[in-house]
Structure formats: C-alpha cells, structure tokens
Image (tube, rainbow, N blue to C red; front, side, top):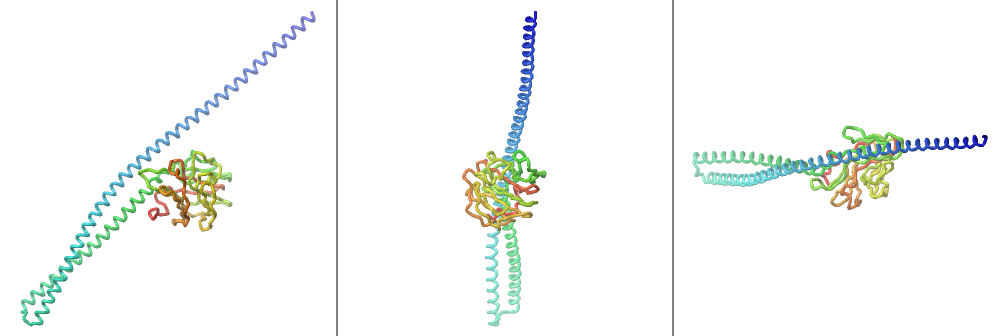
Length: 364
C-alpha cells in the first residue's frame, strides 16, 4: 500500500507540471500575437502616411505645371504688347524723321525769304505792299516753325515714354522668367529634424527649438530645369536671431540620402554658404573670408545658372566676388533641394524663394 501511494503521488506531480507548461506557452503566444498586431497597425499607418505624401506631391506638381502654363500664356500676351509698342515706336521714328525734314525745309524757306528781303531792300525796289506780304509770309513760316518745333519735342517726349515702357516690360518679363519657379516653395515639415520648428502661414521661418545640436530641414520642392522656367535657381535667407556659438549654413543637397540631425554642408554632393564666410563644395570647405560672413539683419543668397552650372553668392543685395565654383551635371535632375542647418538653440532664419529678392537677378 505505501508503494502504490508513492506512484500515485509521482504521477500527480508530473501531471501538474504539464498543465503549468501549457499555461505558460499560451501566455507567450498571446504576447507574440499582440506584438504582431501592433506591428501590423504601425505598418498600416506608415503606408497610409506614404500614400498621403505621394498624393500631396502629385497635387503640388499638377498645380505647379498649371501655374507654369498660365505664366507662359501671360508672357505671350506681354510679348504681343511689346511688339505692338515697338511698331508704334518705329512709326513715330518715321514721323520724327519726316518732321525733321519738314523743319529743315521750313528753315531753308525762311532763310531764302530773308535773303530775298535783304536783296530787295538793298536794291530799294520793293514796294511797301510787297514787303508787307513778305513779312506776313515770314511770320507764317515762323509760326509753322514753332508748331513743328512743339510737335517735334512732343514726339521726342512720347518716344521717351515708349522706350521707358518697353524697358519696363522687358525687365518685368525677365523677372517673371527668372522668378516663376520660386514663388510657391517653402520648408517641408516631412523633411525636418525634430529640433526644428517651421513657423508662419507660408512655412518660410525656421527656428531651432533645441536642444543645441545640428538640426536641418529641406525645402518642399526640388531644383529642376523646365522649359517654362528660367535657367536660374536662386533663394535667400535673412538671419532674424542668433545665440552664442551659433553656426548657420544653407545651400543645396540631395534630399533622399541626407540625415537631418547633422550639418548637411559636410555631405558629399552638397553646396553651402556658412555664416563665418566659408563656402562648402561637395562636402569640402574652401577657405574662410571675413567679408563674406553674415549675422543678424543680413540677407544672403545662393544660386546656380543651370545652363553653365556656375554658382553665385550674394550679401545684402550685392553679388560677392566669388567665382569658379560649379555644381555637378546632375544638379537639375530633380534630386537636389534647398536646405538650411542650424546648430544652436534659439537661432532663427526666414527664407525667400522669390519673386521679390533683395538681389536683382535681372542684372546678371
């Protein structure tokens, strides 16, 4: 009897262990299922966010092309107006030449009559009536001469106004051609470090909200070469606030392969202008010049002539004497974006993507 009780006790103990192991396995499976479900939910949210971003980019591109087409139509209208003004100016030039010829003829007639008058007076054979007729004729010629002179001066004044109008239209055309691309660009909240705050209805102000370290943000739209647009790409930033040990750099870089929690100027394929007066080309500093440095209240710009790939740099509306810096041939293929990097908490800048720049691109 004691032996049987012992065997029964052993079997009971073993059976109890099997039940415990089954409960533990069931609990682990439940945790794994919950974790898998959370991952699936996160993946679904990420897919929805990507789809939303793709749709926003598609809509933005369509809006951009529509505005480009409207601008092209407006430019054709302005060209027609300019051609009409040029024809009018050519006609007035012909009238001016005719007036000058008539004016010269009147002067010759007057001289001829004066000569005749002197000759008649000299020979003392001119009657008073004849002399009176001659004087009246001279008076008429003088009156006609005054009228022609007045008309000639008015014609010159009208021609000057037309030339000013033509110059104004040509300048406006050039500005519209140069600046069309930049009117709708802004900073991209989806390509922004967590330490950066984008401010303003137009998303043009960038504020370093801390903690102090390199923080970067890209613009929403890339740099592209389009038949509707200019061969120039250019933008400016204005420094609104800086803190101790501050550093700011801005320029152009490839958006997809660049991390936002660092100084983008050091990346390969990057072109930047730093506040200490240093230019960065392809991730390499090219020396520092104090006269190129900038701070609070300054407006600085960086641009590229897409046809020649030559870079330009400006400060407070003046072009800097920096030359012989060129971007890569792939610069206008749509992979490069404007960017700005701030290092210190509290630093703040405002971007200007056009059209009213401090520097006049029409002077290039």
